[in-house]
Image (cartoon, rainbow, N blue to C red; front, side, top):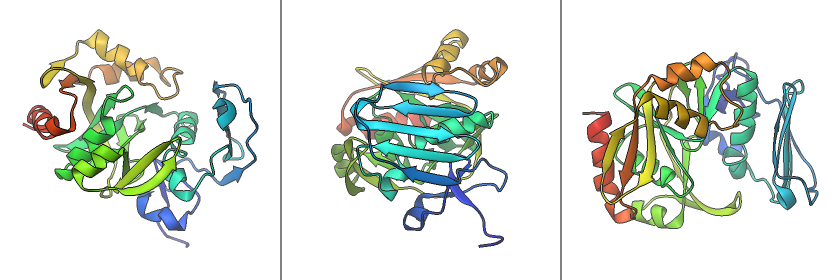
Length: 278
């Protein structure tokens, strides 16, 4: 509709998907755009790995297929074994193209989520099985705005909001009493919760999740902060500009250790909030 606000996620305009528009966010008219989506038959034996170039990029999943992106055509081609539903496009099948197209636009991306406290965004990152999405969902249940679940896009020092959802595993969804079962999407079962709309926020710092015997938030020194940025770079191609990572490394960052168990989540979240929003 002429004059209407474009929708998308991660600062990226996305083709109209009416059935899942409730999960999209307003984006700016000048933001990068994906104009078309294509779906092809999956070919077995695709090499695993990622190829990034100035005009074309791809990610291969072996027998599970391949996603290809064309910069000039502003298109994404899915040739994957799984049927890509509209719910699947929201997540996880939007994230990788979003990282690529934003990189082409000069933005950095990180495999992480983000929350808003005290008018600033905090990136929340962690290795696989570190409880990142569960932590974000627990914070959302406490009224903390969630900017993104699995991918953080930075426009300079602004964190751009991702889709309005968090995908959980069954135990976390049952503990929180929330989540719509989606079945198997992106190779695992998912329970999806919807979060409130969010606007871009200036970055305030980073939190890196891990497990430990008790709740501990340890400030990280500059060298470690810089190392973590490279570790969680979503595309593993380094910063758009080395000076950018140095600017990010100067922001506060903490290593957050807490007991591994859903029953201790409330205490752990309170400890985190005590430090980030005293």
